[in-house]
Length: 362
Image (tube, rainbow, N blue to C red):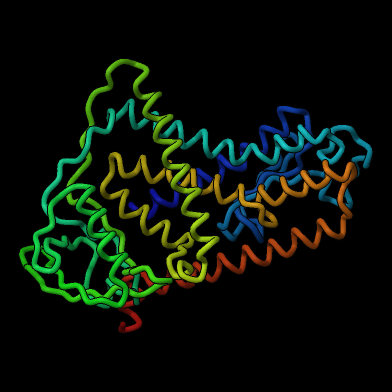
């Protein structure tokens, strides 16, 4: 059920994103011809009120289509309700609405966490640092670390509990590229000694593992009806800032961080693991993925909302639309790039799944 839950969350986030575009257009009286989840061949479709709703074969996103995109559309080119004939401000709202919808959803999920579970009040911690995930072929996997292991000592010194213990361990790893670190881990009833050698990636040590405090988050009842609102606002700002910083670090240090980029398969695997934990983990996963979708789509890349917004900005500066040939080439190059990148990440993530690794005898 964990995988199905994660898939349902991802599908829901895509629907919310595209619904943002759809409702921003229809609310302004702009003609819409299609609402699709996925790309490629149509699996299911239904037409309502002149709009073709479709589920497509490649679950890599979705799109809202307009009569403007159809050369054979019977609607006159000068129809005032076509998207291209609307003022820049209205078109900008349609483009930005997907990002806004994902941010609003993340805020609503964080608010729901405050109402249902309460306000975060720290962790009920135990000694050690928990290994939540391991990337195949990276330093952690080579050393023998597995998800669920608890690192209890480093260089012969016991590791305490809590978020600070995670931060201290991460910092020790970052400052020890190509240096051998002696660990002791708890796996079930066994204590296992291990030697971990962080890989040198741009002068920073990386091990390819997700580390988290050993324990569970503690919640308390809200102090008044407004506290969940304030907490949701704070968490949304904090998570968005961290997400933006992560994308900025990836763009500026892509060579060193490329191996850490994950695609939809890895996201579903992580979501499935968190779904089994339930509670706050699933709330946070949903909010974080929604924020990531918002930030990703805001990037000024072809085919993404940010790329379309950039074309709109250039049109505003020029005072007239950009040549259609340029716009078409821009969008087609983006489609090839994004689909190609998605396929590469799917193959990469799938090859690192434990079942596939076992099948390959690695």
